[in-house]
Length: 321
Image 1 (cartoon, rainbow, N blue to C red):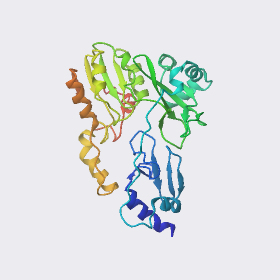
Image 2: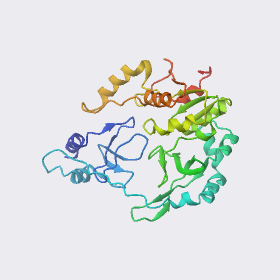
Image 3: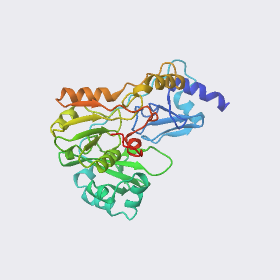
Image 4: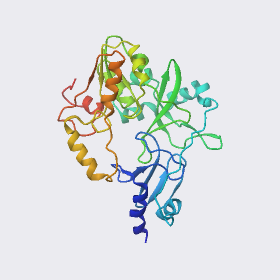
């Protein structure tokens, strides 16, 4: 009987299949939209879970939530964002928390296990390790049980976000402390007249600067997080050339020579009415050009596998740039 539930549930939710075998969609409980790079709801033939509102359950429980006994199309609830009345308390005085991350005894080793950053790079950018602050619906603050690689993000000298990279095998790869805002990572360190790469992953941007000290790199945190006003912020740093180097996939730089192949793969693995992702790399490049920046789109070589990022380029025995 349970085996019969999944096709019906999948037909209603119409989720997007992931590489891990489960499906992303808007949460049927809280309405949180499924956005790549953000925590949201996922389901599989065994059940579903939302990493935002914490709803979880078996297929039978999910069927009850979706009211499968009710005819008609399923309509997900509309998520209503509550207005922020005050800054998250960790943003008011973050220095003690940041010091705890820097002083964690496993900090350097955990970062070395993730990417080949030097101790100097880790220290200079305040990368840490520890538990992140979150707030429950009732307003109560708590620290996460899991520890994360922590990346502080600043804007105009103020800490606006704490991003965490998962070091475990379950859960989202990246997560934000409650009250975080997206920002253009590392933009304040862009050197005038330098080649400046726009990457997705924060740590890959730092690795690139480490490998090429005369260059600069910023990161957007994900292909869909770009804000048009960031182009003006970048232009204020006066880089010589901007290289938009999002990942080699459909929502990143578009896939380049692999785009048609990736589109065919997408169509074969997704429902018929599932929209093919737009390429965000060209959109970012156009915004930078409008801001007066000399800009090019990084051309991934044919040898680069699909979904390659700057970390792949940096790990090659022969330099790609």
